[in-house]
Structures are given as C-alpha cells and as structure tokens.
Amino acid sequence: MQRYFAKVYERDVVLTKDDVFHLTKVMRAKVGEQIEIVADDKVYLCEVKSLKPLQIRTKREIKEDHELKSHVVLVMALLKGDHTDLVVQKATELGVDEIIFLQSERTIVKIKQSDRDYKLERFHRIAKEAAEQSKRSVIPNIYRIINLDGLKEIKAEVKLIAYEGMQGTADSFNNKIAKLKPGQRVAIVIGPEGGFSSGEIDAANYYGFKKVSLGKRILRAETAAIYALSVISNMLEQK
Image (cartoon, rainbow, N blue to C red):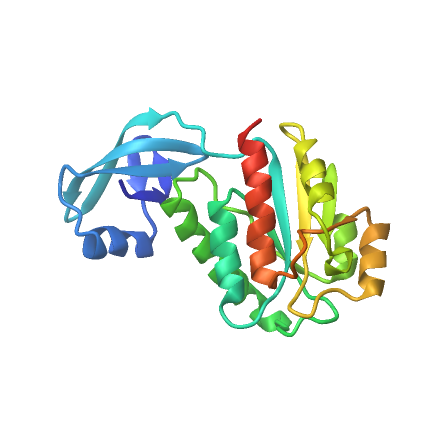
C-alpha cells in the first residue's frame, strides 16, 4: 500500500503537488483505493473519495512500531557523484533520525553557500521517498552542513568516529552500541573518500567522539556508513 507524508485537516488529506501527480498519474489511483498517510507523527488509513477534484479522507489511525528506540545521528562527509544520494536513501531505510553533512580537509565535494538550500532540499526529497518506501513514520532531519568545529554542537550520549587508522576488529564499536539504552542518542561520524587526517581525529576526540574500527578491511565511505548504521539498527531492534 502506497504511503505519503501529508497534512490532515479534520479528516481531509492535503498532498503536495508532486505527490498528487505521483498518486494520480504514476500510480493511477482509483476511487475507493486505500493509501496510508503520515501526518503529525501519526499514520492513517485513508481512502480516495474522488479524483476530480482529488479528495482523500482518513478512515482510522494505524498503530505501528517501525522506529528505532534510540535517536540515531549520522554525520557524513559529502561524497563524489551520487554516493551521497545512496547514503541518504539507505540511512533513511535503516532508521536514522538525523543526517548532518560534513566538509572536512579531504572532502572533495564542496557546496557553495548559495547552493546549500537547493542541495539540502534535494537530499530531503530523497529521504522522504525512502521513508515512504520503508514504511517509516518520520523523515530524517536534514538541514545543515558543518565543518569539523560543528561537531562540538552535536548532543549525544554516545559519540563515535570511524577511523581507518584503528583497523582491526569491530569489537569496540559493537560493545559501545550494545550498551545503548532506549531513548539515548548515538552519533556516528563517517569520513570522506580520503579519510580523516590525524589532526581531525584529535579534534573529534576533543569534542567527545571516540575512535572506533569498523572491521579488518578498509571500507569505501558509503559502505562504511551503511555498515555502521546496519549494526546500530540491528542491535537497537533487539532491545
């Protein structure tokens, strides 16, 4: 069943222009068809009452539990090509609550101030589509691009930074995630294609981020993000 994020006024559903097009032209919805709508953190079973004009009304609230028990923040260096798009999509599917983009010393992609709003809105659209596909009830918060000093503003009970210089087993990473309690926040920092400099690691440590290894092999940046979030999601699902 198709899911959309929308607004609900009394029992009437208001979709965005893009979602109206998707529902009516791409999905070819018919009168009487049921869809799911997420509004104000609630999920509703809804029915298409008419197409011209489009009218959708809620039928009942759906109770579900698809979100992780802890708040997960991904701090991800901007990557080349469409690799950042891939990370946003998969991070959303894996339950991340917030994605913060990082411009570090070795970050190849640099976003101009004038382009930031456009880029962030594009990433938001990717996250929205992934949240709908994966039946989430929230869209990850994506609203800022920081430099390394911005790490000091991130609030979390568990702060980790993946560092290839600690190449070895992932025991320390797994152990720290296993100790997470429901409701706590965890932030994981993943570097760019060229990794972090030793000075950047020292600065991150100063801001409270502990170095962890993600295993014996050197992973590509996008693989590292997806792997780390998969471990976090898996362990939190068991709590």
